[in-house]
Amino acid sequence: MTGFSTRAIHAGQEFDPTTGAVVPPIYQTATFVQDGIGGLRGGYEYNRSANPTRDSLQTLLAALEGGARAFSFASGLAAEDTLLRALLGPGDHVVLGNDVYGGTYRLLDRVLGAWGVDVTAVEMSDADAVRAAIRPGATKVLWVETPSNPLLKITDIAALAELGHDAGLTVVVDNTFASPALQNPLALGADVVVHSTTKYVGGHSDVLGGAVVVGDDGALAERVAFLQFAVGAVSAPMDAWLTVRGIKTLPVRMQRHSANAQAVAEHLVEHPEVERVYYPGLPQHPGHEIAARQMSGFGGMLSVALAGGPRAARVLAEGTRLFQLAESLGGVESLIGYPDAMTHASVRGTALAVPRNVVRLSVGLEDAADLITDLDEALARLTVRV
Ligand code: PLP
Image 1 (cartoon, helix red, strand yellow):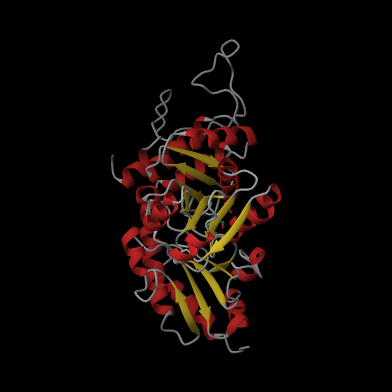
Image 2 (cartoon, rainbow, N blue to C red):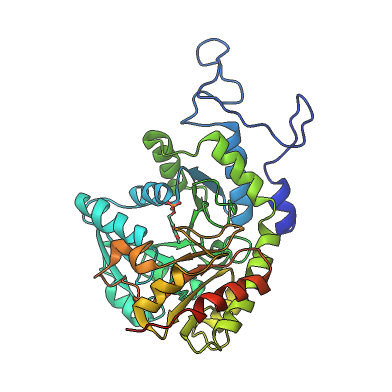
């Protein structure tokens, strides 16, 4: 197998045989002409079942994660929904981390819950707590998100995969925060990887998307393929094309995201207004050693707990200039968010609630010195405390 950067540029990206165009074209079409009934050209029939642009993205995603097959969707949650429906039925149970993306919990609790699926959130770094949460016969899925959103908890994927497999579970890893450039869960023993490709994989905050990558081309792959077609939450050709375009620079972007986030984290940890910095690249982070082992960089996400409490957190989130106040993460531009009232508002009052003095930063590719100045200026304005 070629190296990661080579795959990011070439896997599934053969030049156009008709014109020689280096960049494969966007097949912006809903349907395909047949040479007589059933006479399909290249197997293409209708955009919901397959499209060459989506195929090129799926080939690329499988190559990046080292998976047998990948499936691309209209959003990360659409990918998760399709995967969970492929894995679960009424009466089944899921164990997931107590710091996963709030929307994942909402999907399980408030959408799939109505169809008889049950969910338990646990501290994933506590193997005994995970074992205790597993209900023999009912639990089917162990859902791991590492680093997690927004507290950057690190889970030992290899250890959890072993634990999950001993109990006969399918082990799923949400690899959105690390991206395949920094972490490959399938190689560490996970069965399935999911992504919000809206984030680092796309990388430019201009496209919504999601992916499921399976380690084996077996029954689960067939079921996901069927549901992708039968339910139809597929990525549109233009979205797939933009995602492919973003992936070409994924390895270099992740290096710079990691370097910038490390610089910001090391600066903030010394700041008197900051109570705690959650960043796995800091030696004092409880998951630092595991992250150093299973990731090839610590990524661009970090969270900060403010000494001045919830009010200070809100003032900081609304007070930066370069860090723009917005949902989402993983783009070239830096973003700041207040999880309690934004990304994680749906899990307030649950085991997944985020401390109200926490602000989340998606550290972009600007000059680190400018980002630090921006944060320092906003922190200097924190005068009122509760
Ligand atoms: N997984 C993680 C870790 C996320 O952060 C998000 C979105 O923020 C999702 C999944 C859902 O992805 P999307 O917003 O593309 O549906």
